[in-house]
Image (tube, rainbow, N blue to C red; front, side, top):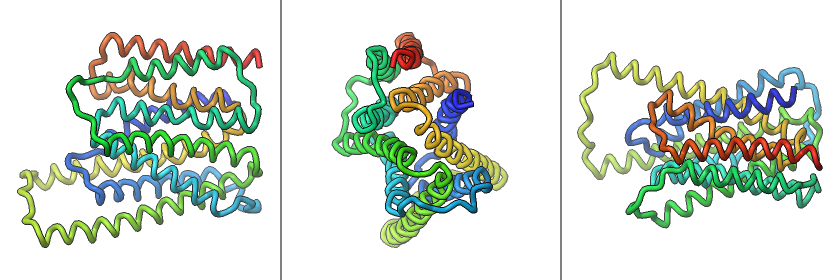
Length: 309
């Protein structure tokens, strides 16, 4: 059952990347971003509630600060990724974000002595190499300091999310998982709401100073179709976020860090690259396909290495 969940969460992680791209619109600002996050994280909270409704009578033994820390890191990792994509290359920004799995992997081996084999190390090296090979490096494109901070922030916060998941599963009852996620996602929604209100105030002040930019002519029917499709994608994205957080937190207590985090992060980015070719008709270079093959080999070595620990 646990291995099926591992395969499922890899697929959901890839779909999350696809849905995130589909929810992006032209000239997305802070208000639009927080609005999308409000809808998606609200849907995620509903999904988590429905999945854990049978544990409502269980005691809540997790400190509030841990749920708040999880909420801040989860939201900050997504905001950093979005900012990095805005300021620099999408592929390299995603690479930095995905490499965050190294942080909880090291954490699990240092603090929980989960065991490590030479095949594990080779597997991780191959997965990181696959990220680099799969990335589209563009010559002559200048990288800003803002992009560097955003990319490194994505690495740090996505890694801290994994650390908190590992910390939770090793110190608190599994019956508290649903309550932990309820509180964490409630914090995320509250923070997003605050950011949305701030963005509203900033936009209003800008409109009083500047004249509104000319808008593209769009028919009423076309606008409704576009809005309806965006809402549908956002709701679907929220359902995926809820499922991914629930499954990943559970699996972090079932598998060693050296297995679960590289497979979840590495598998998802490799699968999303393949899906993008068919859904968005993105053309992959030969070296990118080599990167995908190298990544798959790395994941296989991680699984084989666990047999010798």
